[in-house]
Image 1 (cartoon, rainbow, N blue to C red):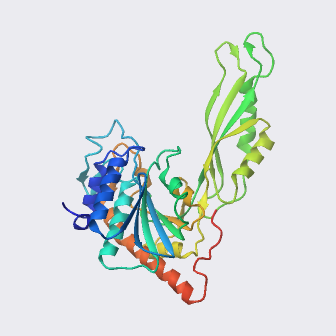
Image 2 (image 1 turned 135 degrees about the vertical axis):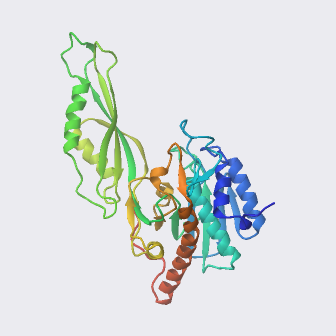
Image 3 (image 1 turned 120 degrees about the vertical axis):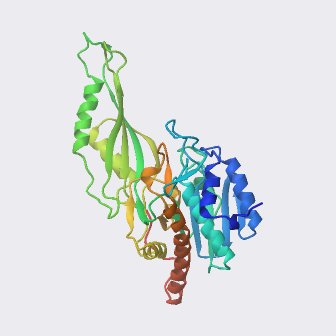
Length: 374
């Protein structure tokens, strides 16, 4: 049997793509990955249900890398078999190639190569490969691990960022607005019309804004996305509902948003989802400085969410190969150049992070000190 240490990151990615690991169906991939990594004898292997953690070193500081094994269902417009990877014009095609098996492959290969070279971090570096990132249910692997593992000292989240380091990401708050009217025949009732009631509130909503701004991800953004009202074409509507997609920033809490909307709109408001909070990392923290220095790219902010929300209390950088615009597309693909570049990039970030933490300690500075992460 060919060991992982004998194949390239390209071959590893192609192998992972062949597993149709749609959310909640990751077990076959996880079983294979656990067996393969264990066979190398290079890393300590830990399993919690279908979530894997691979460790190199021990003690503190602890740098945790994380990416996910699940993918979204393939598109009906995919050319050929979405789980049969193909390579063409410098790109690898297949479901999950960018989001996020490219990150899983390059993170794992980086860790294995470091271990094989004899590298011993002054602490511990680990890779958590977790399930159900693509679904919003209760099976999210990173959320479950946080109830089991200790708090890491820093983290790297593997998502497609073109290997640019992301230091902040917006959160997602989904609210439901409801107005009431008087039910009856449209030809007779002259009382409140729930749709008109909602329309007047939406006009007010258009004028609302939050002045606070994050240097990486800007301001809070509120978008009405769906509306439903009335029961028949000849019936006076007695109810109307609107869902709001609100992209949040660390400077404006969910509670602040909810309070402001309730006061300004004067209607029934309920929380549909508030688990995806916004996150940011102190730009001077060693993990942020390491990522920026190694890549030579400035820190940036992302409008999309990720499993970083479950590491909101940990200094974290989101970084990985591939372009997020290719995620979930019909013919998802990743650049071979990006994939291969990711392996030494992760290795150097790891080395640089531990060096910076050691240098901090040598200078008499608390290496774990950081500004509060939101």
